[in-house]
Image (cartoon, rainbow, N blue to C red):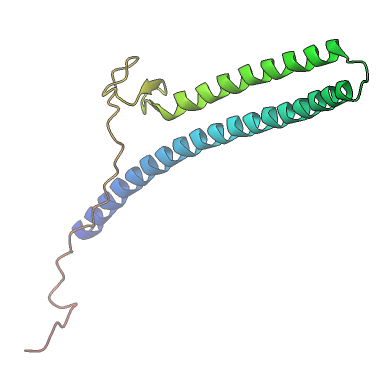
Length: 151
């Protein structure tokens, strides 16, 4: 095989490997963003449920104002539901906080602190995943193939 072609194939293999690494890193980041989005949607749904419960409690309070007998058990039940949903919201916000303050080890997948330099599980480097793409050096041209500028 021609030396130039073999060198070009070797460069192509290197670039393919680096491209695969970059794609893997992007895929992991997309997964983390999807997880955060799912959690935010759960928080939104829980907040919506709380708003409905607040409205129901407000209606019951207005009934009391109008002289209608209060459903104290109904009020207490709704307040307990709100408390439960607020606890779930706090737990979900903590999950988001943990996702944002952690990185996944590229070797074993364990969650590690962003402050860590190495993974506690496998010892792998947690440094920034930078993929450097280098341009191949210009190939020397055959003297017969390029007429070049006229002198």
